[in-house]
Image 1: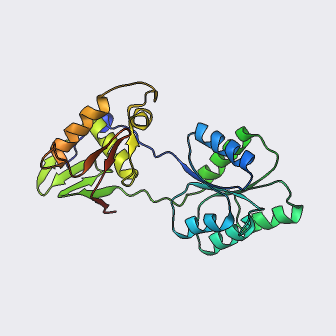
Image 2 (image 1 turned 120 degrees about the vertical axis):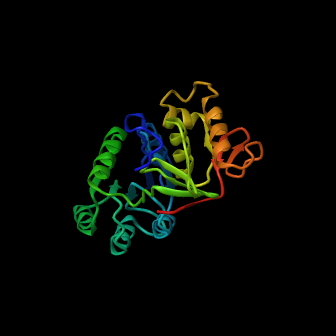
Image 3 (image 1 turned 45 degrees about the vertical axis):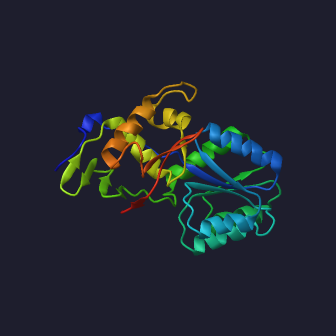
Length: 247
């Protein structure tokens, strides 16, 4: 089997967990947002049940959903009922300040993974979110193969080919490319590369990522000075364009 990187050189890579929070009280959702981000999560917050249900119906990839019961538009229990009826397996943590015992029992019977009454500490919230995420499978697929122009890239086998030609990436190049791919075309800042790929503080200024991006351009683009795939985003960082997931 052909590989580009020795097993011991591979860089461990894990996507930051994503949380969907449906909460309409601004003090509460600010506190939850801050706590989850501090705990390493990417967070999307919606303030009504209809928006939350829309994201779940659209197949948005989340590792945990945190639902308040008393939401405008559609309450948390109805969102939970519809989510489980659609066989979406994302872990769900219900939070509420006014729920009765029957509400709690109904929520658990509908398929909630945990129930946290208000008021609660944000530390406990993050701990419970982590716990239900460990027990569940999440709704986010983890594909391993992409095509960038004429290059097929397999992140599981650490193999990249242009036809019969085997391309060689360094461990850090694999990390940069995978992180860009998993951002699905969105811009990635240098600070994020620092934390997720280089494993250094976000505040450190370094040109390491720029050098690796240029090296990748030389391998992926016909003209690295006029790239089609690894694009600079002024004032932000880089994004990956014109690629597709294969599996």
